[in-house]
Image (cartoon, rainbow, N blue to C red):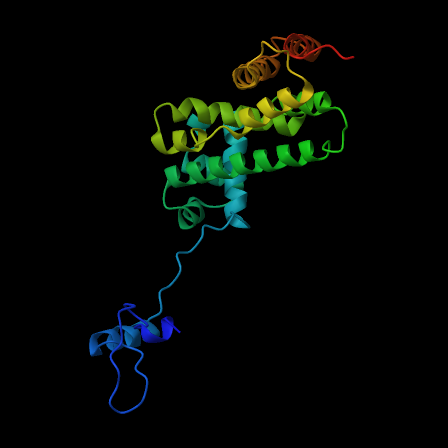
Length: 241
């Protein structure tokens, strides 16, 4: 009943009408505003669609160039040649080269996260939280061709992001969901009493990421990396009963 006595536009009180018809606007001004709103309804802001078709083809060309030759070689001409299109097609789909580079990084970042979550989710039924903790950390390692290529692209972008705020913003997103997940898993897996799970999570994620680069450079074999990971997990987790 209270809403029936309020103006539909400004929510101010309504005055009774002498003609017996219940008013819905408090003034001619509010009535005019309502009329204009009906004639020109607000258009919702468009959401940026995921690159598809030619746009996706061009983005993937950026990834291949970054992985194989370095991001400094990703000129519009080189990207167009790699994608099998003309430079004009690249310029049609993207405002400029910088817009293309940022879009390609954003998409790769989202897809890496999505695939990682899918692989981890496949182990959710595992009764041993230690298995899930180890699998989560191994997601940071380049264990197959796709992850090796993705890490090469990410590394090329990371170096460029040190002097490019727009690229840096993709890496420096708010929060630390991976570290938070690892901290929760450390606690669930049975951390030793003296262990600070949050601090160990930061160390583990950073350390395993660095070991992933060692694998990429073939500085260390996978057996050594896994042995190092197991050493640190044994250090922070209680012994099995």
